[in-house]
Length: 223
Image 1 (cartoon, rainbow, N blue to C red):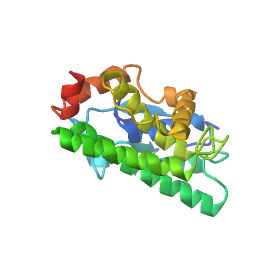
Image 2: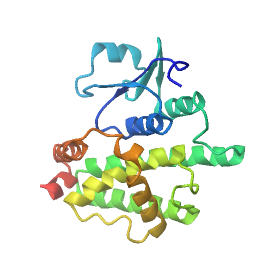
Image 3: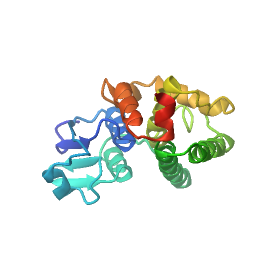
Image 4: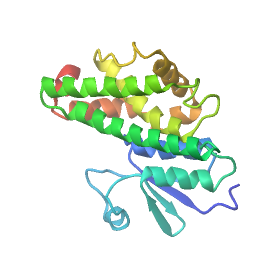
């Protein structure tokens, strides 16, 4: 496989859930690649020159650059044998829609950990519960989103669930007890090696430190 593929370098940040999507895809498809971590608080000039949005992940493909995690994951899937998408066009489109839904959940999570007042925090918490209820009612085939086969949807939701490993270690944030299918899906993803290896070893401590530094309502709960 390695001889036919371009040289791939994933420009990353240790905490970015969108980076994790791409890393999981790279690991699932066993794609040789380099990984470069940057400080988003002090972005290098070379990065700003090649990143249209100033965000990670970026995928350097030989001399070309891809941005946006969804485009990166689709590209990685397409240049390797097999697919992490369903073969049926309608099912594939539905998977892409649930990937977008996952991005909206990440926005809500950011709203949760950035909320300054308790009222706003509780509003975002309820928003999360509503979104999780929507997924639960849609049905999860088990062990993964669409059954036995791991898909790109799974690569998107694994980083979402990883946030709660850290949240729950610090505060009592009950988001899964009333959603048994979602809870089982989360556990199946936690056990998968590509998910476990998608973050740096000190991810848990780094995220906890990041959350404490937000000076938000969640920060006070962690302290």
